[in-house]
Length: 149
Ligand SMILES: Cc1cc2nc3c(=O)[nH]c(=O)nc-3n(C[C@H](O)[C@H](O)[C@H](O)COP(=O)(O)O)c2cc1C
Image 1 (tube, protein in one colour):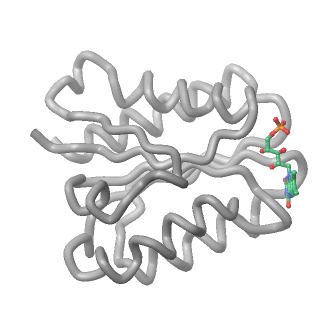
Image 2 (cartoon, helix red, strand yellow; image 1 turned 60 degrees about the horizontal axis):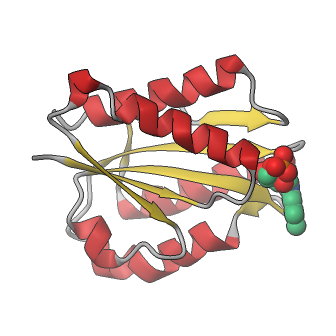
C-alpha cells in the first residue's frame, strides 16, 4: 500500500486547522488505497521518510524562513534519504502572519536538492485561515495522496 508521510510543525490553532484539513483531504475514503502517516517534524526520522512514497510538509514562517523544526527534519534526513527518495512527489503548506516567501524559497531549495517533485502548488496562508484556505489544504492532501495511486 503506498504511504503518504505528512511532516508538520504545528504550534497553534491556526496551524492545526491547516493540518486537519490536509488530513481530511488525504484521508478521503476514495483514497483509502493510500496510507497516511502523520509525524511532527521534531519526531520524524529517516526511516519514516524511506518507508513513505510521497511527502506533505507543513510549517509556519519564522523569521523569514521555515520553522527550525522542519529545518531539523531536513538536517536529519537529507543525506540518509538522498539517493533513495529522488523523484518522489511532495507538497507544502506554509502559514504566516505577514510574509511566507522566505519559508517557501527555503523549502524549495532543499527539496530541489533532494530531487523531490512538486505535484501541487504550495498553499500559502496569511493570518486566520479562511474556509478557502482550509479547502486549499484539503485539496493539497487529496492531490498528494492521489499522486501515489
Ligand atoms: C519568532 C517568530 C518569527 C516569525 N516570523 C514570521 C515571518 O517571518 N513571517 C510571517 O509571515 N510570520 C512570522 N511569524 C508568525 C508565525 O508564522 C505564526 O505565529 C505561526 O504561523 C502561527 O500562527 P498564529 O500566530 O496565527 O497562530 C513569526 C512568529 C514568531 C514567533
